[in-house]
Image (cartoon, rainbow, N blue to C red; front, side):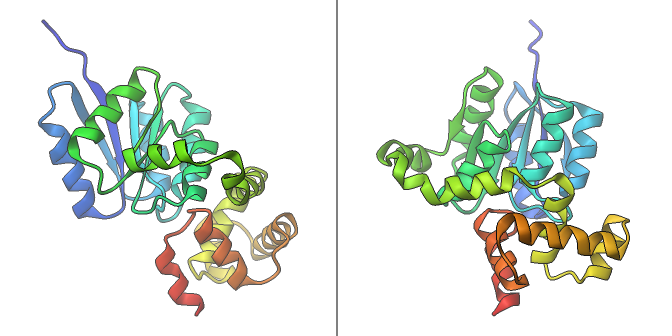
Length: 227
């Protein structure tokens, strides 16, 4: 009897981690990795081309972060399910991931059994969070999410281009580098920076970087560049 496989796109910039996930999934008869992406933009392009059932998406991807990549994928292919991956379980990360449309959140140290189970669960229309996150969510009351909730509200009001500019600022890119990276004029980059600061009520680069880290837009290691 033919078994329809669940098609999966792996979006993870660290090759060794991506290969680990591929090998983990290859042994499952009902799961099939159909593509691999090393950047957020590549993930969006491959998702549009391959139309996978599930995307395993690293939250901190280069060029386009996992949050914005998820938004762009789901805007085009709403039937695709996105499972967010992270080495961090901060409440803000989890909240922003679900705000972006992810239907689950997995820690990278999650067991192979739970990863495969999560893929099957979200394919069947359910949500799935790593056990440690689920337990914490059950204990917390709504007040515990106030800080993350405010963060979500602000991030949700940023345009896709503003999210891209924010990520590049947090990665230490100057206006000229951002201009080249995004294919827009320097004056346009400056205007986006101005809008970002107004919307977020943040008025210096270091604070924008800390904000991006707190939102899960870039990895916390970026903090080293602003010390």
